[in-house]
Length: 202
Image (cartoon, rainbow, N blue to C red; front, side, top):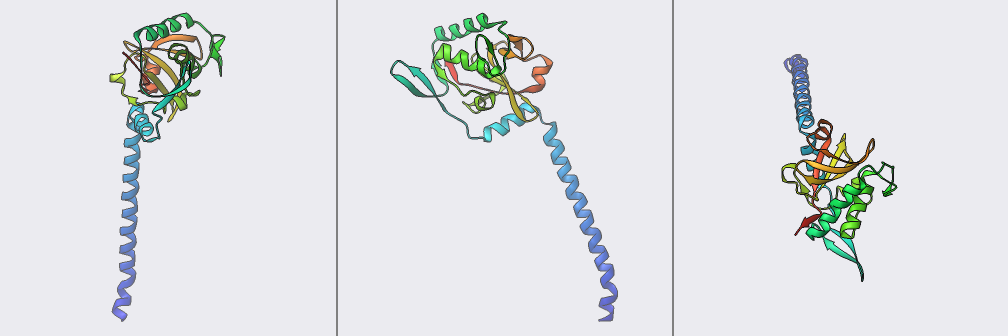
């Protein structure tokens, strides 16, 4: 009994050292995993995050007989798509206005909502966050004209535009109003999140 008592403190000390080493190893592993997550490109993180959210697969379109529910992406005519491009051209220079949904002034989601309503009679969600949950997610190298492109600050969607092809997109810039920029510009590269597809030109 005395012999067991004599060695108990030593065993307890050894066990304590092992526990401490295990905690240090676990902490290092968690830090390493966190570092791996943070160095992943923003677009990869955002695609993963938003693909796990419940996505909306249909929208309403205005018809002579009333609103009609349609699955996305919706097939639209070449003529209607050209009409949207014309609307973008006509809107260039319209000032930015927070909450704006008319040609008196647009914010980013208001501009998208206006374009798709005017050209395709679509009733779209009002905010960029809600728009980001509509339709399938499309990687940047697979974007097609008419897709929506989203940008993030931190881990939240904060901006949306309409992809035009050739890396260009139209949007309501807070500093310059309606304009066309390119995804290759540094700011937009750094904040690009993903694209979604709500129309297909037939």
